[in-house]
Length: 231
Ligand code: ADP
Ligand code: MG
Image (cartoon, rainbow, N blue to C red; front, side):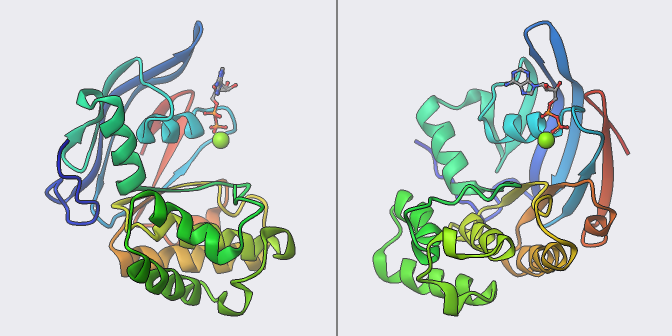
């Protein structure tokens, strides 16, 4: 075991460092040597055509997909050096993930969805409830907190997902086309929240997007073509 202090910046100002990441599915190369550094609290938009490897890159960063070669360094740790249990813990404690299709648990209320990851990492009940309340309030859903996902609009669901992704105070937030299934108004509301919450929580953001409006909330934009990054 090692101390993973999610938001206490054990990476010395660097939230994420990727060095020469490669990944193939079968014979098909999908990532062809990706280098990228995100400073703590930095917001970076990742653009690029469908199929260029953006989602695969996010999955490699959080360890859902193993890389073929290269190094992923987070919170000052090389993912490749970690035992399975420690990798799982690092993912759980220092990464937040927001998906295009929300991925909320359908049988849990908005409140319970946000609370769930905090339970997983063993946050004490009083602290948990206080934090969930505050986050639900900051995404503007206090009066919706007892609703099930089915009873919420797309924009509301994504705001629940955003609160859930931040409850454990991660150092890095990965967002894969988070506005992709929302209309412009709801999409813009989610983007605004992504910006204000990333600042408030000091979390670095890697935002995969097709939408040029998303780049306005970021410090810089990078593009992916055929598995390589171009600035
Ligand atoms: P993007 O998110 O940029 O649209 P993806 O990372 O989803 O691109 O996909 C990149 C390429 O990898 C695509 O050709 C896709 O078909 C392929 N791919 C993604 N995931 C898998 C997988 N689990 N097995 C096989 N091929 C995959
Ligand atoms: Mg994708």
